[in-house]
Length: 407
Image (cartoon, rainbow, N blue to C red; front, side, top):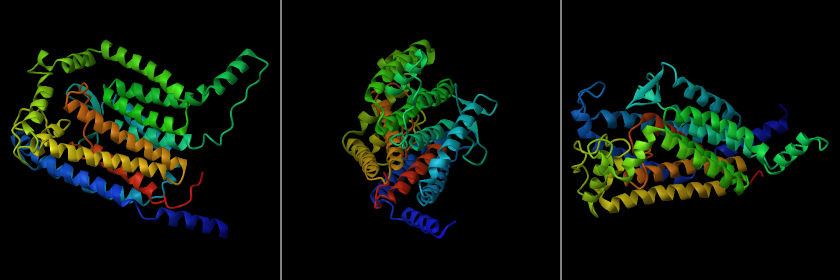
């Protein structure tokens, strides 16, 4: 390596050690801290009444495990934030290939079925008993698309012979941008098929939203989003009405009282929990709905108990913190050093925003039940660690916002 190359490498490493964005970091830690407190309040009774292993009537089971994963996630976030984010360019294809391989393993004996759906893999002691490969696929798609699309402004258009009909057709398809979208569409199709048939419609939606955000910001024509969005909407409608699992969810969403003791029980109790909280709430730890009324309140429905205990005001403060985190993330995207950093932050922050919106929408019965957890609040070691790792990527990009843009 030449002396000049060594100086350039040293400069890049110095840029990677710049100050991380403290407002973004503090918002992440505040939400994580509040989430752990609320998880302990919500899960204490559920764990105490659960005699099955591994819970075994241990009231501290959920909070202990979640705190361990939170600690490991914070360490991972810090380590990732210290990595020069340019390394994620060459890592992106490997992460994507690994995520697809993990999704395929779900359809083997390693797949774990819970409540009638197979979304998990046996993980041993690494991530706990099980973990969801779709969580890895979300960030893998964002990283891969960002790494490829950041180069689109410098790539030359494909040229085919004009002497043949097929050549002229290919030139026209290249002109309207169709050929550019083919590899991205193929990747999304493979992942969507693997995730949809778990079945995991909410995971599919999040993956599409993250990919769509990166494609849109990269400069793909808006007309493609209108056309493909229409096709995706029709496909989604077909899947919903052709699948009894999804059709039942839609009917219960429209009228939970059609099945108040089974499918409609959760949304009914969730709305009752929110309504009973009033403006200021019943007090931390004083929820009545968590005593067996809201099923598994430590998971997707945790926000209902949060509003019951902290009130409408407490719920709005938490939503404000999420809003500030999302806005700060987009601000970092605007000030990223290069297009790869911009696209990556946009994809990750959009994933977070979509997940918060979909979870709150389900809790308030604004949208059908999607099975999406609330970031930093819902119980789940894999999801929490990956969310914190994603925040680490954003913080890594924030370290270089003071440097001149490379593009």
